Length: 283
Ligand code: ATR
Image (tube, rainbow, N blue to C red; front, side, top):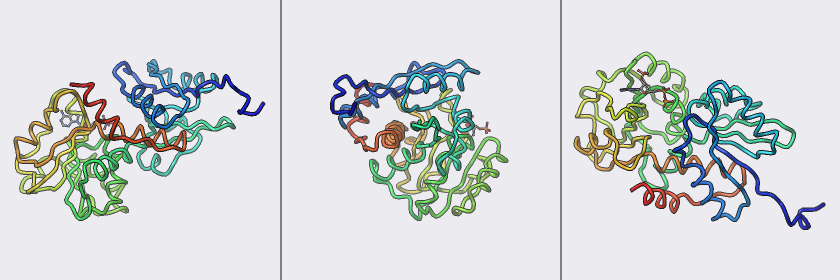
């Protein structure tokens, strides 16, 4: 029967899988996107047991699921499970979006870097070109943002990490895309940057990476990939030490969700109203 007579068409089913997942904002974000773009879909959060990821994805697919977001700690498993990967997912080494095809194949994508760049360039109106960038941390979060940052042609990027060798290795992996180097926090003495991005997980414990207080150039911006109802410790530290603009990662969260939505539905939702709504909800 053609769709035109299918009065009882069921909403397409999407979900985010992670552990823990109870505080996920993805269901509310996608509900807003669906309303705004008139898309008939449901989006839920599914807590998956460690060790149960592949089975959970297969069950979701067998039950007619249309697509998934993947969050901590399953982004690497999603990368390995996908039948094929977008080039940005390959470079990120992780997958946050699974796209299910009618033939049963699954494409793995990564929209995190896109989300960050959308926030920085379109929402915050910061310019990256010719700027000196510092990225703190050398884990999965950093790997996911380096390619889109380098595409904007900063003057250079320095990755500083508690374990300096990880920062150096990561810089080597991306050196074909632009000027990038890595090292430890000690290497930051006497250096100044225009944009500092905290991609460590230190904020989760309320910690601040041990960075010299002199890193901010005049008019420098500071971005913490983490977000919360209150400014993170790193955000407060940035304000105290001269950053002119200090933001959290809520815009990146909404931006990565919007790009996943676009990959699934072919329609681009607006991010700004959803960022504003979430911000109101958190205070
Ligand atoms: P993610 O996927 O969020 O990047 P990850 O791959 O575990 O998570 O990486 C966490 C990053 O935060 C690492 O760069 C880690 O430093 P190490 O590589 O030396 O472990 C960094 N990190 C975590 N806690 C930190 C802290 N308290 N101070 C500074 N760096 C920290």
